[in-house]
Amino acid sequence: VFSIHLIDLYLQHGGNTDVIYNGLLPLNVALEKLCCHNYLVDLTAKDSIFKLITILCLPQMKVPLEATKLLAQHTKKATEELFRYAKDGRPLQMAVLLMVARDIVMAPIYSQDALTLNGIMSLRRCIKEEIAALMQDEVDLAGKSRYSTAVKVFKEKRAGLYSALTLLDVFENAGDAIDAYLQADVIYKLSKDKVAQDVQSILLNAGFHLKKRDTDLAKIEWVAFDVWRLDCVPSSRVFG
Image (cartoon, rainbow, N blue to C red; front, side, top):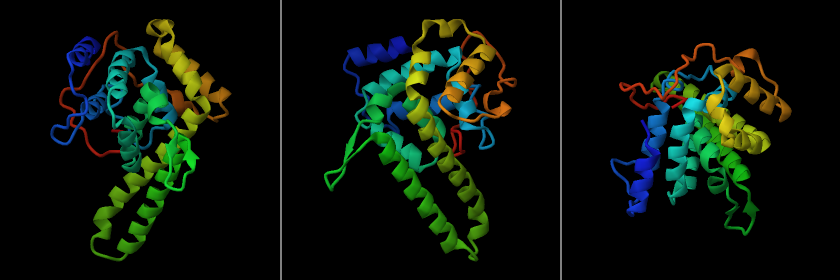
């Protein structure tokens, strides 16, 4: 379970949040740990981005989100990590970073031709370029012996990339409303059904058309504390 107190103590004593161990930053470790939360670990490409956002707004996600926010605020490469997750087609990690540090990871980016792009535009272009490259890879492998084994990988990554684009649309149009909702103290006292209704209202007001499954949390086992699946091993699946 995340401990905001321990992370804060680590930072107060000069802890380095940019140190890499086994290829991971502390921020990466926090994000992968969050993927193992009982509410998130079983999400698949069949589950919508809207459902992911709804789950992340539940009271039980407040502590891990705040802990991740603390790390993101002190990680110099937080924006680079967001772009890496986007290119890898991993919307769950993207969603968390956009929820906890949108002002940091979506700061304006200055290109080599002196043009200034906002973070959303830059990230959207990055994802579209990755989709185009993926399509080219599929064409290049078509008819070759390796194609059959690569089909599943292509399919999963493509689903992740398109989910990432939808995610950007959500935060571009409803990001401020989601931020305000997460900051409300009353969120600790809300039931999952109330959260689902509130998030649905936010998304509808932002112009999104939802289906029942988009905010259906019927399969979420309601608990009064954080639950982690200890045997979870992070993988390259779409949501995680």
